[in-house]
Image (cartoon, rainbow, N blue to C red; front, side):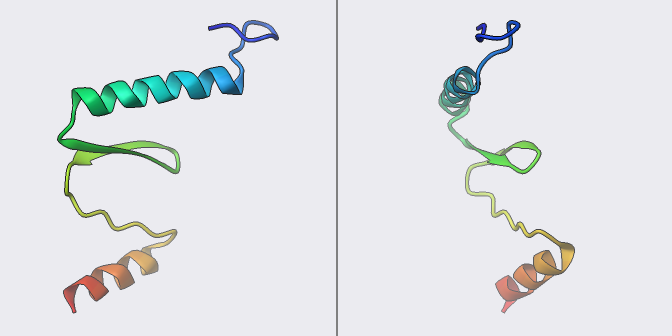
Length: 68
């Protein structure tokens, strides 16, 4: 995969490769949820609840609301 400048792949080439890899990962591991998160990728067993927030206070609030 070589892009037009200095051998670096273009954004479209990287995106296409990533799409293929994600499809392969999901087909190979169907019992896992694979999602992109800030800073990378996350793979967890299917059905695992995830709680996400931009800060710890938000996580605590969401966890507390699940207990109610």
